[in-house]
Length: 371
Image (cartoon, rainbow, N blue to C red; front, side, top):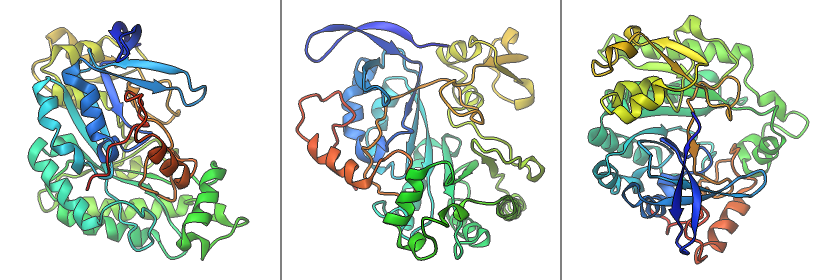
């Protein structure tokens, strides 16, 4: 369902038309909680604010109002700076949940500017205690293998983290790195990673793409991890995100990051959420009763609801429509596999160049770095 249009008055006193999405993604393109939390909450203004977003393909500005926003999906590798602002979202009657990427590539230094694994685990635990495990999705993403970083080794690291996160989440989501499809990723892996450069060159880097055999081996290990925890009272669902591999024989179904089913389950008592999701045009449907969701949904809507897939995402993606407010080339994590930055140097340049820029509605305006 396309976002409504509303009139807003900009910081410069100009009246303009703005999108008013019900669901906001913050963000697939950059880590807003880690680097832009203060900016975000200042722009949000109790749902009365707006942001100015730039189309990455043509750089045309689009105004996005928070007036109708009811759900925000946060994506982050370090959401700690945002935690202090969550009461403001609660006070505004806005629902939210987190896609928290918690990888362990520390030994290989593939994510050079994020806090230690131990620190991120503590943040995960704190967030779970504040908002509950059902609103906190653990992502290990992307999964990548090298000649020394084997499927068994990656699975062992996941198991080690899981020992710390038991009971803090209900779902683990993973996806595999795409190397063959992105020349930029190939260049970055060789230029910014000693680990990859020591094992591959430009002629062989595509060999680091996960093979069907590696995927199958890895999924088998994850199945064992899930069974281990089920036997110990933790029903950890394991899902795969936007992948061409069918892992249903391992009990791993496709995940949906902007997840209509999850939002209905968590926030179904809010008529604005249920009306938006259940009135979406039909593209796929699912049985509410089979999902054991909530009793608040009106009887006439309990049997079948129709969900429109986000047309802006890849074919394998099952996300419902939302408006992403992030911008590429603004994240400072420096992950060597990153799709969203043209280069770490450009992200740093944007960060420095925009510190004192007067257009405060731009996502390029960063906060001071926060721990």
